[in-house]
Image (cartoon, rainbow, N blue to C red; front, side):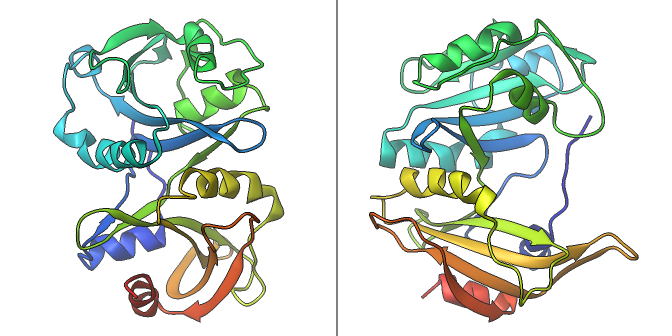
Length: 263
């Protein structure tokens, strides 16, 4: 079972062979976990694999390089703990996962899915729910995202990293949140409900020199499917700053956006 959510910005970068961008799209997720105040506590590289041999593979697999290395760089620049978490995507029932904690061990070990919330607690995450002993896979969305919503409670904050920009030294220079909806591009502004997740990213990179940007494009499924990347709207969060805010940069095309990032 493959999980892939197409996104026009990612497709544009891939189709035009634009270098220095990193992203994961297929059965992989780069996650930041935080407490109720959006203080980052844990980085998680989630990797969906196809068999038991891959689940317990003792080393990073080639398919996990773009997933792991950016998070490892964030770990080194922030000292926020980092783990690799694997699960088998082809099983109808997920009973266990494999984990390696970069800070405490380099060995992969298997734990039961039911024990994962308790495992997360040791990183200071305020987990309020108990996990089920197993979880039924389905075809509607990511198993892992559905599982965490049901079993980790609403007290924690968690967000994906959508897109990463590297500088000429291959260091992370920008984290870019990708947003889209059917709202006209001139009217759209970041939703207040998303601010806790944005703050989670901002607090993670506060003193690293990494910039936080937001890229919006028009997207609708009715009456026709449209994912318009010809014109985008850009915002950013000034960092470092003691006050979280989002500032509008302007409306531009993708060429102008990439030039803006390279300034």
